[in-house]
Length: 388
Image (cartoon, rainbow, N blue to C red; front, side, top):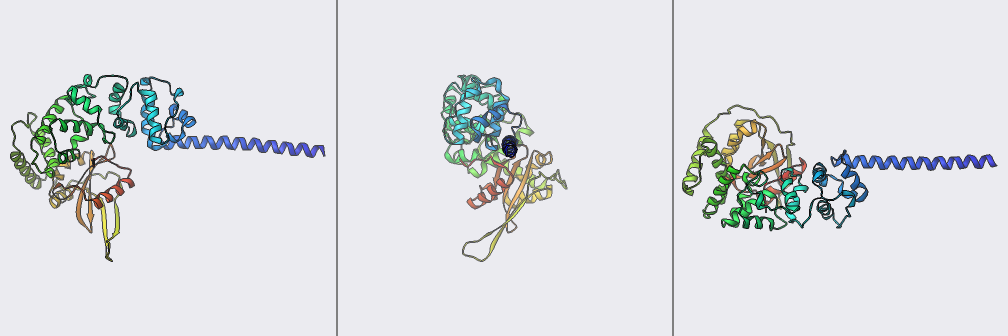
């Protein structure tokens, strides 16, 4: 009887030991899975967060946590002292950033630097968060836009729904020069709302933005093609200036350039390398009708097809031929029942949709927008063009 009890006791102890080992193994596996899925396998900050606030260790906050880890030397407080504040994931993450980086309250829109992993703007956030003057940064690589003290204050005071740092800077410039709401919406969908340039180039674009604001009767559908035309003029002539140019002269020059583009075939017969994104074919039921519409989104992979796209939709997409050939961007055609509807530009490096334009550079209609967003989600693309 005694031997039987001892054997039973040993079996119970062994079962408990196996349960402890299984639990530890499961916790380790879950921990490794969470870290790997968020791209934070070697992050000590992420391992600390698993203990204090595991909901932050996910893909959504992975880029921001990685950014904080990389610039650990900029922390003003140790991560171990952080006390989670807030209920939702975003508020908890903001409280973490504030604990590590900020001495003073920060404008809500600046946190997009961490949500989107915008490393190029990290220095700007750290400087302001730790009491630095934004105006003293004007003219540096971090703030090449020529802002006055008043405009710096307006930038810091932008609302929380401001979509990004560069878009906010362009908004401040347009506010300064009295830009209309329609102009702001159109200009925020152009290339100059997606990148900062050198100090000299930013001075040029500040004058160009003023030129657009000084021509309020200009049809906003011409804004994006005019930006492309201005870039072309500057490439041809580095001394090109917007001073003294009338809207009529600029439009005439743009139309002449488009006519030349439709005839010139510098890259005739060139095949483009695929960007690696998935093309789609979807059917949607037409309301109150038995017919169904077929929508496709396919990549344009030849200069001939690129020219046909620009000719059909009457825009200057052919001017992107060299950028496509060099792999900087890819162009996609959205079609309804094989009719060209929208042309999409994707930045291959940042995995963002930079432009979406239809006939004569019109913006996508609501249903077209929904089709584009569905395709973007399928390919893990961000929508960089603004609807603000």
